[in-house]
Image (tube, rainbow, N blue to C red):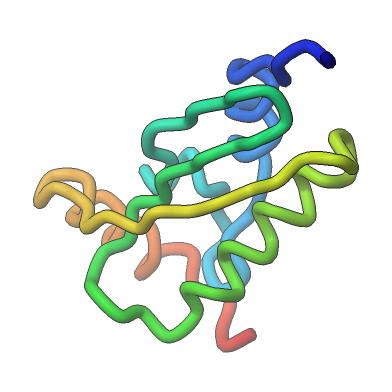
Amino acid sequence: MGQDIPVERIKEIVKDIEHPEIAATFYELGMIGEAQVSGKRISLELLVPFPNIPIKDYLAAAVESAIKKEFSGASVSFTFSIMPDDVRNKFLSLARQRWKGEI
């Protein structure tokens, strides 16, 4: 049986993904939560500012695509959690400063 994918590598990959509407990475925006790896199964928590954000599936697809570029056999699942107030405030501040427009 194969070895686990390093969780640190998953975090590095996700850290460099830029938000589609904001000129900032997921890491800068505080969107990266917990990551767990079991074999080739990856479970990743993405933090979002509000429930039911319309681009949630787009964000998940961008993350999954980036991970599968390096680990093609990986299975990626997501949970979405609401950002704590301090993280959301930073997110909104960066969004105002670096808004690129609609995807």
